[in-house]
Image (cartoon, rainbow, N blue to C red; front, side):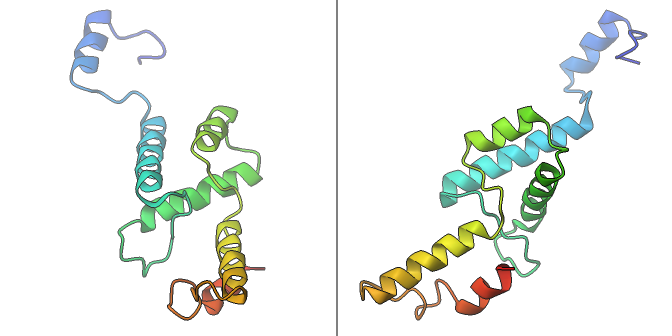
Length: 132
């Protein structure tokens, strides 16, 4: 009705005044994007786990992140959304962040600076599962 201008301007104003959501899909996308921004502010990256065993409560956000990557790969993600995600340092390849983290850990282990592999921060098993 709103797009076809069949609602009066006073009715539109009333609906707007109570926070009526005209585009639920856009609203949902923006809510997830805001959650991703908060996640990045807290964790320093956008690589959200989508594991059902994730105890941080971010499983839904992780699935949304994965969906954005799939949409991007299929060329179905709008350029506006790509720009928004790029603006916060979104990583378009899911395992790239994990691979980079593993490479750094292995390098540091070789240099005897630290042992991230032994303290459980990074495991060889979790790394190899993600790499095709």
